Image 1 (tube, rainbow, N blue to C red):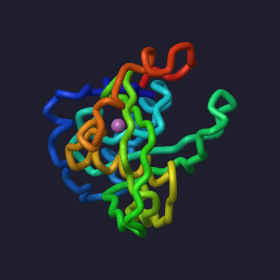
Image 2 (image 1 turned 180 degrees about the vertical axis):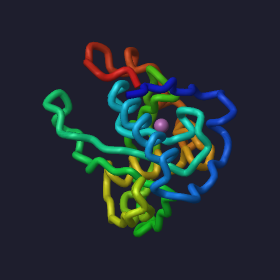
Image 3 (image 1 turned 120 degrees about the vertical axis):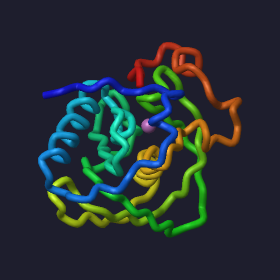
Length: 177
Ligand code: NI
């Protein structure tokens, strides 16, 4: 088990375009994914991209389980996605709050496409393909943006809806990502 340090906004690796993984199933990739899972679990994140732990490869993980503390949060199946591709299935955009382990303590409202298809491989090289809507589609876009050096504040259209969790949602017991 290895919980890795999560780089914060401003670190140059977070601005770089990550490189495709050449060999799914390699011991290096399996170790990377294990570390990413450990790190995401330790920080209560909804997702994590390899560049966030300093590895410039096209690997993301995400997943949200039902939590009684957040009854409105939609469940997202736990997914490992290597070399992801996204095809948008709509031009419709919806605004929603996002946070990021690389922007700790903050939340912002981000417009995202509401429906897409994503594909890629898991860490063993098995193909993954799924359609996603709503919060699931939002998480996929957020994580895949990391692979192109984009953090969610760069997608915001109204910086008036960007701030510290404690100021935006006083008294609410939200995680600190
Ligand atoms: Ni993020």
